[in-house]
Length: 370
Image (cartoon, rainbow, N blue to C red; front, side, top):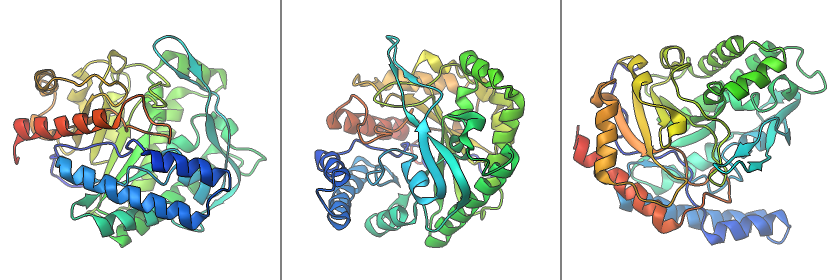
């Protein structure tokens, strides 16, 4: 792992961006067999070129395709890795008014195999159409287990969690290596499961399945590291940690304090993207556990609400965080993507642009070219 604690970019974003109407309409038509796959791809290509230009024009240096080819941030992994399907999750999203939203979760129905790359075509298209650094986002390994726990494994296709995780790690290693061979230098793994384990209600569900949460957390950390420890030193790996993001709703709440010392020291990533846009995330004190050779991107701009944060408030929060971690280890981003699913969050494109522009401006004012 690099000895440098500086993040790749001071101003960054999580990856998914609001889909334009051309994309949302195309998804509906494609799902209804009204357009061909070639026509669907052509519409996606055009919209992705536009969103690449948008990011570059705003001054971002970390460029994604907005996840415009995906129904959700984790959908392509299930679609392209043989042996995975979906079933109803054992958890549900919530909003601040107590409303719940069910969702589907991955299940494994047969031995896993990787007949094709999960994100190679996405990476190649961005690489061909930007002069900046393409960032590839991939779902985190624990996502392929947490939302149904051990009931993820059906039909006895694996006789233990350990064997399933071993095979899953092999799939991730192959994908990460193949992306590097295509030229990728920056990969972000999007993780909701580990932050969920700071929520007492979630821990109760885990215990009710006769699973020790401490053992499960250790298993998740080992799974993560088994996926990334063999990566080339030129390849930077980030993990984005949030509490769920579906149309502005969340899966869990709870600060990082119960997890911080363990995950910040034992997860062998270069950078942590951390959700910090609401009181659900707790305070910055857990950042004192981040070692010097890792960096943190503060997710203190909300992708869920239309209100534009003030520069002064953001700078004050950065200053607050720097009481616990060297400011040189910090960067700035939204707490999550703007559209973890095709539907997106309850904000407009103008709001998205304003928030991304604000991030670039504040980062430049706080860190300059450092």
